[in-house]
Length: 256
Image 1 (cartoon, rainbow, N blue to C red):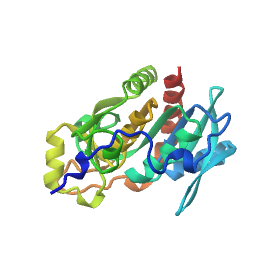
Image 2: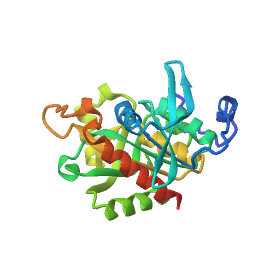
Image 3: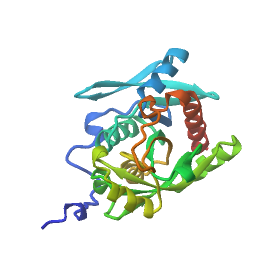
Image 4: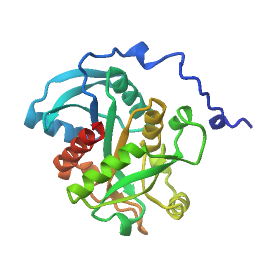
């Protein structure tokens, strides 16, 4: 049987490339911040009324890219679509537009409640249980986080007294196939949480040589005998302003 994920092609030029579909934009912010929560972005837009500077087009409709401002810095702000393939396509297009530093944040399922309770998760690596990363980085069990991004995030969290924990996460394409057996295996491997995009986002950032930070906050709890949804359906909105400000701060620190 062919092992397709072992068939990595190092060729940088594909048949269809981001520059074939997306134009470079003069003056595009060098820092881009994104989250999976449309509510968090929409709350910011209602409060601050930032200009729309671009669009990410999909068959589902378009996603606006806004020009936010933080401490005098212009920052591209947009919603990332859920799921590794859609998320990465958006990141590719944002990089093509001109972004040179990226911060991505969102919620995850908790696999270690004791370690993560009340803390932001800063992934240092992600187990590659999805398909997208396999086309951006040679096959391996996990992919390591961008060290430049980790250093910037650590400085930011420490300076602002933000409780955080570092560790591995599990990236899976199949939210409804996180079985007890797999959850136990990933917990034993040291994973703090499970998400759907982290490994793929890390991979495209490495492939395009773009400094990258991702941080996660716990939503539903899988570290229990029965599934606990908790505040999953809020997608971080109850602390959205805090998370967004933290992402802005990480972004401008990474730029320096």
